[in-house]
Image (cartoon, rainbow, N blue to C red; front, side, top):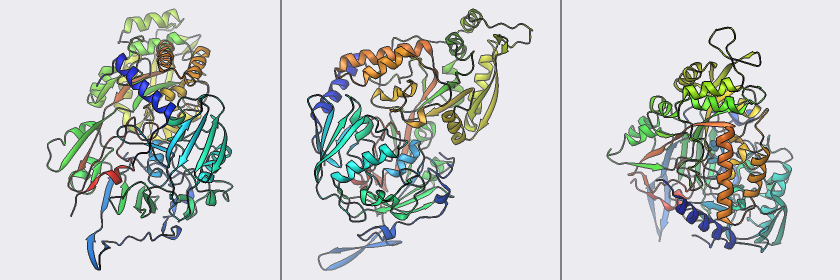
Length: 575
């Protein structure tokens, strides 16, 4: 579905109204290195709960009146995004895979379902007249899975603790002070107006139990069993660090509805489609778009198509003088045939990249930015105008005496795309030497700034355009997986307008600011988007039904079927 400018304004007005008034209460296949060596030990949660957490291996007992009835245990099996490390907030991967395994255990003040934001641990909130103070009313009776009550003290503690010990997924830098009004009321005062506070902070920051973490001096090394005490619908039973398998059991005291399963198992699979069709799993959420849609019409299989919240893009190290030159990056962009990459390397499962960074199906998309259709001659002209020349006739240009020969770092699953990029740039006189490695290593090198050119993909790309913080000098509001280290692009106008966009309450004016940000990116090309990936999943509807894609993705754009609310709103179908 394509959004028109009129539709965009409608969506923006709805979001603005929700922010001002508050919400009413609403009832890879590849294994990622474990986040810490201590996580290599299988962990069990049994001793951390005050209520009974034991689920029988094959049956559970239900009491109806005076008789007992034996029913089969309801075990839901899904493929995991990857081995995301030890499932505690400071130990799990900083990628979406880490947040996905955490959100079953830990909760936030506000959450999202398939339609948008819902009040969650907070049953309501209000905003002060100056739009800098948010007052949250917490739900009464909520308890951590060890039996301790969840109160405003835990909210204040979480913000204070995560300010002292920064959490990679969410920044608290926008918060000036958190005040406890009473046991179930807390005020959060911001340093300045931040229109994305609900989307960026309140709906993402996982609440910690004060009675546990106040004793923890270094949460990055804390691996005791109570590290995963939370208020969520599931409790961790075990984590197999070697295999990347997470096993959860139902939290019998969950506050937001009756959990429809007894056990959840997340396991990485090389081929989720085959695993689903063979009955090894009940939902294949990480399968490719092509594999998912190929199962349409298969008995007992439901195929879902969701928002595209993932993109593949090129990063540049601005320590390199040639790559730091705008005309060189523009020439690279003109040299590339994005549609051909999409069609040949990825079976056409997506949308070719656009220059302004924002997805073409986003309500924030500016369709009037510069278009870089492949134009080899224009690329050569730009390079010549920038001073690049082939002085020795070897076919490789030099820029200020240095050969334009660079290493292209890519994930080993993207080798076909890399060869196409190599051929495109060779045609205009730029040599690429391809270096491939596993995706986790690539992402680590991006964040360290230890690369020359990279082509790599990531999610965390949905909802409020706060995600454009990854291109600003101050990246504090961006998901870590979207940022790059080392010498980066800096643009004073972009920084100024982006900062203004985070404080602009008039949604029409904010829209104009975000439009201008895209125009700057399209001209400067600090990054080049190659394509936006289509998204689809499949599941066995005779086991569990009611999966959905979360509006704008779980948290900051995680585009998979892991939303914990599905476990209460869905229906267990297996006998």
